[in-house]
Image 1 (cartoon, rainbow, N blue to C red):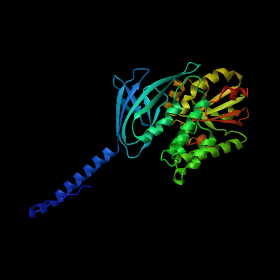
Image 2: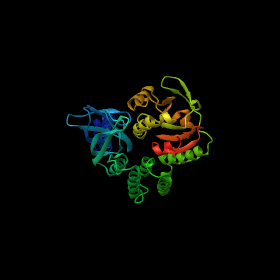
Image 3: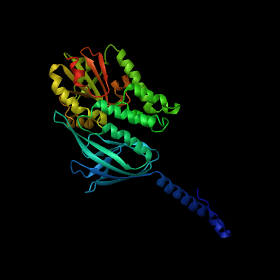
Image 4: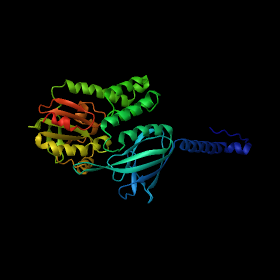
Length: 364
């Protein structure tokens, strides 16, 4: 707050209301400037691209930021609360996730191609905070382990072990860190359920009420519901050519994969190249895939199908997002959500990732 001391003569007293307005305006402007300085975000970045795009997209609303010839870019904003956000290149299907809070950042980004045997080319934007707020770097450490690309000897088991060690190093030391619920949520699909339950047990009462933790607990309940059902819910939706679809319409299939996701979900699209390879290998032996889109815009849904080469199997949606009948029935709060069903639509496995060849061959 700014304080002013003034002495008014009789003439100035007649003008005091105007002067008081000026003083109030000056005080408000000064406070606004101070707030902006304390809550400003400045990101100095450099990107290494596979193609020559002239922009990146920052945040969930996709604000375009120009990229200079040397790959450098700068993003500025003023925020009231720290938050999770994403950075996309012009080509990436998988975004770089970053925890954004007031401060100045120096980051590097790189487009990385993930090809598979089916010929798909999935581009991910991987990044790293070189310098920035400590909490953002803590979050970045987990993201780096979730999406790092290594040689073929680096198995999913080794990846899970590496992520678990990082989570232990953070949460066992400081379980009440304000980022703890968000870190647990990010690692949920990659870490064993017993470990996740252990981490949740470390949280205090307020953290237990965090929306991400509630969603995980709901997911545990959903798994109990799924395992107790005689059949998977017989949902109805529409195909890409506007034909009505019902799950019970599927006949003469030995194994069905239900794959639920949406366009801007990194974990959803990261699995599509593997699904393409698996479908090519096992479709003729009784394996079927039904991809359910929770997009709300048809153009987003169709673009994902085309870019990820998903046309060969069944794609359906009601374009209602998480208000979809199927999402509400199972109380879905996040994706990817994948399950395997047998020929009678009975659940055989809840998947934490895409199915393995062993998962499929056990039923064909």
